[in-house]
Amino acid sequence: LQDMCEIALHSGNNVTIYTDEDIKSKIDENIDGYADIDWKVQGDKSTRRFLSQVESDTGRLDILCVNTINLHLTNLYAFATFTPDCVSLLWVHNTNNWLDSRYSLDKAVRGYLALYLKNRVLRNFDRFLFESNSLKEYASVQLSTDRPCHTFVPLYYSPSKIDAFDDDSSLSLVTPGIIAPFRRDYDQLLNAFEDISPDESIRLTFLGSPKGEYGERIQKRCAELSSEGYDIHWFDGWVSHEEFHDRMREADAIVSPIATEYDNKRWETESYGTTKCTGNVHDALRFAKPILLPDHYGKSSELGDAALYYDGRGELRKRMTDLLDPDTLTAYSERASEQSERFTLEKQARLFNDLLGSILSN
Image 1 (cartoon, one colour):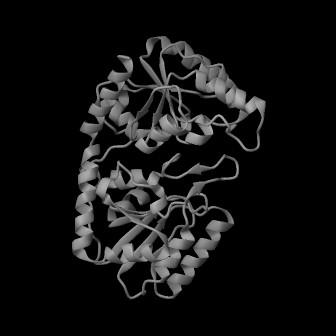
Image 2 (spheres, one colour):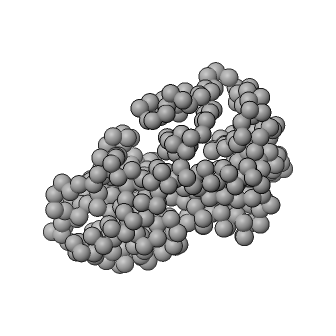
Image 3 (cartoon, rainbow, N blue to C red):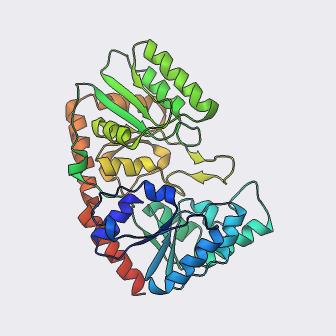
């Protein structure tokens, strides 16, 4: 949200944000133009009352973009009766669950009511927005959605903010994100890392909090590897924004052993790279880092040649050790910088204005 705030402000638009106090507090008050944001905070209003306020405001808005809709039935009911009086976009992050007519958004709430509410919600939006071309293509071609679809990558790259540096001679690899089985295959990564001699100068950091029994088990494996001499680091709890930023700056590359499918037991299954993105791609672009991804994720047009793909444990081990060669690391780092340069604040602001212009002219 903060990146989108800065992009929208930098493009010269008047920005109104409807949100709650918790999310508002996470936006840096020092960003350029913060004082010009028109904040509408929910406070103690119910979702329906707050949406009524939003609805009454939409007559003075050109475009309303709704990012994430909570999936409680009461929340879906509130959005089902929400009819904005301006061009409205729904940002779709889980393509199957939202746009596939077979799915009801929640495995625990199946049947006519859930499907009915979802379809009512969708009818209230004029267009759909996606964070990746692959998701947009899937929605347009495979699901044949009848609404216009657009892509916008919600981030920007600022070289002055990251200013990468090397703190030692080790190859520093980082895996950002919570440690959960429906996100990434940490076992495969640890197996491949274990196949590399601890005498090699490779440091691996898990930059996210562990979740449940799976997270505890991965932590235990990390501790065992550390006791055997492997340079591996992890966190017991929430990673602060400052810590995350510093560790990402220090890293040479990102390793993202993204799962094949996203299934957190509540939602219907999404396919990573096809119907759902990983935030690790955004991390790679925001911090200008090469990224290692499994073949099943598919080629990312946003990453271009800055990604190294692998199939299985053996290839993952090889990709990691390949980066020990300074020339190879330099080549991929330069590619990553070139890709990230496509997403500077100035360029993203122009793309955002072009997107708004094309929507309002049609």
